[in-house]
Image (cartoon, helix red, strand yellow):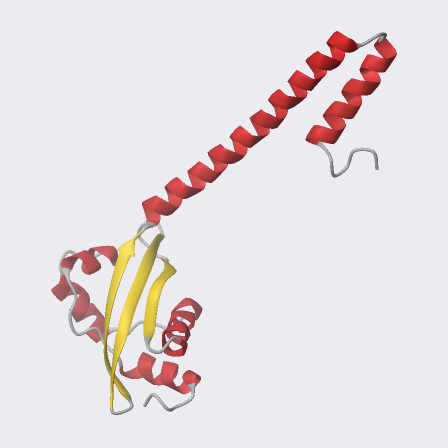
Length: 169
């Protein structure tokens, strides 16, 4: 009943819902060879409640029985964790949610590549700052009139450029 409080809807969905059909791709994501194996397993042992599933169910209900591109991380005991992008729509008839249609895409490799790209960008940014310091030091050396002023200016350049949060405190 879609008029019940959200927590009660989540509880009832966990108790009463089941996957009626799926494809082999979904079964593979859960470590099974064929969809029939996954469906049989789910009939024998319903999934245990977890905070992430509850948050997804809450978002689904609050968004009018719809999910659009929600990222979910799933722990697989016998293999590496995976991250999925899930979208779905619920079919409500006469005030009751009677079925949902969901799709999920394994985006684990995309997320790994994105993290690597962010690390690479951070390294490039650090190298760019270091090159700027070297350039500024070279200019300071070319314009220096004595060693003391050069040391003072180079210290200022390095401190202000590489350690602005703690330099001069």
